[in-house]
Amino acid sequence: MGDSYVPVRVIDAHGHLLGRLAALTAKELLNGHKIVLVRTEGILISGNFYRNKLKYLDFLKKRTRTNPKKGPFHFRAPSKMVWRVIRGMLPHKLPRGAAALDRLKVFEGIPAPYDKKVRFSVNSCSKVVKLKPQRKYCSISRLAHEVGWKYKGIIETLEVKRKVKSQQYFEKKQERAAIRKKAIGNVHSKIADIDAEIQEMGCKAC
Image (cartoon, rainbow, N blue to C red; front, top):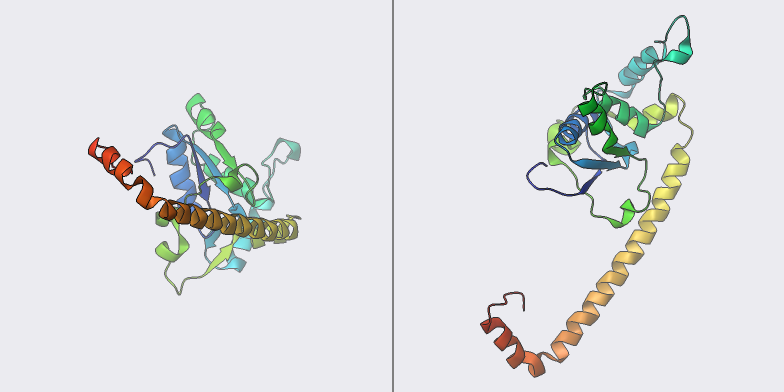
């Protein structure tokens, strides 16, 4: 991911493994990149669901004995769970780590304006690449839902609507591209000599 610079790198987290994606994101943040994680409800955790739920329920018991308001704070939303995992991989109490954490944004679903931007996926963090077919895994959205997250159904509904709009936009884009291609074909014979002159000047795009 660090081989090319993008002002804001939007990563579609659906189907990625939590630990691998968090480690890679933390490293890129420390290198100065701005990262936006979308569709975090689709992140997967290796290991069966029952084991992961027991671990999280055990985590919910941890608190400050004298005053629980002082923490630790137990997030239920998938985006905040992922944010907390990444924070644990950064020196967030030092200026360098705090600045890196400020460069991170995490969302469930794909809110505007990121639904109109190019989204990346990371093969080195993908479940289909890094997890053997027979290994068990669970979805972070199901885990969050069973420990108190209340918006699983709402996010799923919004995602269905977003995919319909995205499909309509893609079809219109294809129609416009076909019309443009046809228009270029209609006038190709008239502008062939002009294109030849432009190519002689060294323009390879024409």
